[in-house]
Length: 277
Image (cartoon, rainbow, N blue to C red; front, side, top):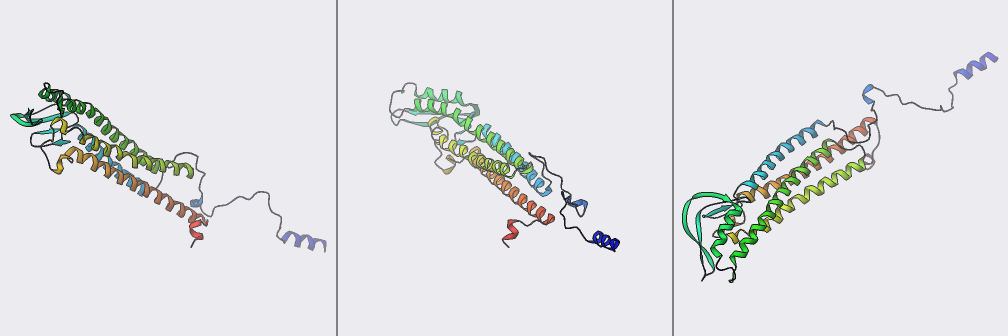
């Protein structure tokens, strides 16, 4: 009788909870090692390919932006074309003190010269009229100073564009394991991307104030007086970069959220997204 009692007790399952429970994965595929804190390389191949395409397009855009800075095609007319470093043309100006205006004078072969050298020569037209009304001499001197501001603005814009373009690619391809830090990184990248084109727009307004003061584009009364080749390249490429980088950030967020849902589904974990269904 005693042996039967011991036999029944041995067969009866124990209701006592063990001190430690160890999860045993159903298959090797379900084993997920703990991720180390910090940045990690994403394994999303579609995301990597998308970022690579964006970087190729951005590199082409940056090359065009740097080229536009050095090309002498920011403003112009049939007599001159002007850039941030050079002025090119085939006409010398004369000055009518009665009308207090300049006019096309002698012609020569087309040539380019440094911006500062052109302005110094242009100012010599008014050396005897420095104190007269409509002071061309003073305005030309101011333009000589403002061109330095434009050079810095355009260089700063392109440099910022490159920095935040690389930053965008980094935060998408190398996300942070901490969701809060990754969200902050994405926000900072977005703010930088949105602010960068402002410098290009600001410089466009600055340039409107001084090109006519040195006779470049002065006789062009068409819309191209304000939208010449280098200027077009600058603002168009800036807008394209903005669109590319914002789309990249949005795509990165979308892919990260999808990966999170797929991981939760694979592990059999209910998410807030599932609870809403």
